[in-house]
Length: 287
Image (tube, rainbow, N blue to C red; front, side):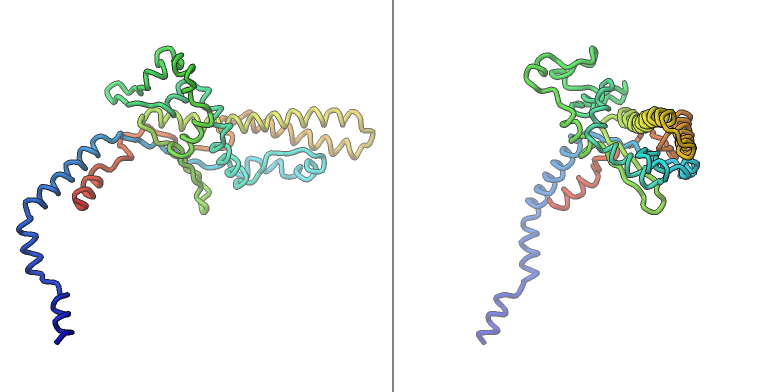
């Protein structure tokens, strides 16, 4: 009997629960409506973000296949030829785009630093991005004296943190080898412009590096060609000189030196976040 009494005391009475819920229906309805309203107000207060993206492919191995025959000679002479491996190139350019030095280079362009660090709002009617007026003067394109004196001007390290964590998304498909770069920002126009700038400047920086290395190699090889008396060595040096001339030709004829855009950057028309409907639905369910 004691066991049965304990069982009945612990059993759930659905009728009793239903009665309690029915008697509290006004409070439940009011509370749910209040939470739902707060969810709606919160979702409306959030800033719209837009995402521009581009699908790219690394310039194929066939573009540098003529240099492969000289690669052994170049390594023996301590000279580096541009890599013919698409994997090497893609890894190189991904790390370049994510690097601090690359961000330091990007913020030298007009309005890039304030657009990354202190965007305030985007006016869809005028397609203009506004900044914190206490820190930056958009008309003169300069930081305010107050911001400079108080040390409020962000450094390239600050810009790199914001750029890497909240703005840039870059990935490579291991099967196809395609690279996808995405830029998310409150201004769809800046998202597009920054993505174009990233692609253009990454191509340009690697082109300059290869051209500089090639020029240095040509200087070295020309001096060695003059100083060596051996015919066999002269022949090898001439081959290496030819390889460096081909390298300079490749770097000169293509604007898209490393990255070729299959799908170029575009100005997004629809926001990428926030998902206001989902926020309101979750708020109502929680309420």
